[in-house]
Length: 455
Image (cartoon, rainbow, N blue to C red; front, side, top):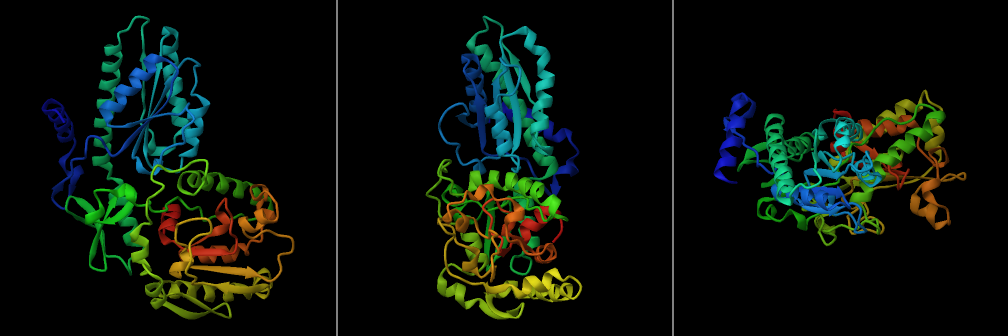
């Protein structure tokens, strides 16, 4: 950073109350770039492209033309999105609307900008900013700015205008991050709370937020928990799987379809970025599995994983699961047996249970990612009779049925009270995924905290 820019930036920081930045007597001054940035734009106009390039240069951001035919990059690697387009149509282009809708589960900041050649378009700026705000949820949105180009404006003036705005945006990002914390702190504290029996407390060390596990300190780096010697190259590892899991099932059959449609819409966006969809490959497709969960579950090898499994009695059957989930799964058993005394639907469901499967050393079907069954942190509850209902999207597809068209009422879901009981103990249900797996529950207390704010 140039000396003049640094001094201006430091002055702005100091203008806020110093205690805002105090954490254990450490003054936190954020990086001016506020994390990896991506400049997404829709432009056929040369002036717009000049502005876009200037913004990318000032922010250190990578450029991506949303109007092109290239697949999106791995969006999970970016903290900030600068989103821009020409104002020629007086509205946000559909391609940008789709991008914002696709990424609305993410926490990355979004800062819009737009360009125009017409004086008459100046009055549309406020309305367009409002349109962006309606499309972008909550604190992700930072109000943007329009750039009005006179017919004979010089290229260097365009670049100067856009560059100055980008510098101001970076300063605002830095101030907000300093005043409100950052993702590293939030994520470290989230996992420390979710797995407090396995992880040490969140500690600010080496100018970063860290966790301790098995005598090793782990750092949060661009969506990945990594040991210190791997932090410099996080792109070589797959990000943690995180989304805001919604634990509220339908209260009546009439509510089932809209509830499932909402969940499908949210989760399918996540899958479009983080799963193995062939039409949207990752730029880091060769990334290896995160070592964090394999260490957390003591499952780096089959032999190690097996050594931490135990047999428990669950719903009248013997199930082999990881020792960590023995207690919460035991509480699920006790609660379901209590509910069965007053809810006739639950005994009928229990009588239809064919098998319960826990530990199974394997990858997710069609994926290089380790299944949570390989950790012993998931259970499948398979029914004896399907009664024309669908259980698992791949089984549905094997019948020649378009699994995406199967509504919730045609899926073999456990009773609502059973789903809630699992969720109360930190388990998520596969029936809430767009690639539905209604027999599947896996232990993810961090997702329940994200979705509900409670353990």
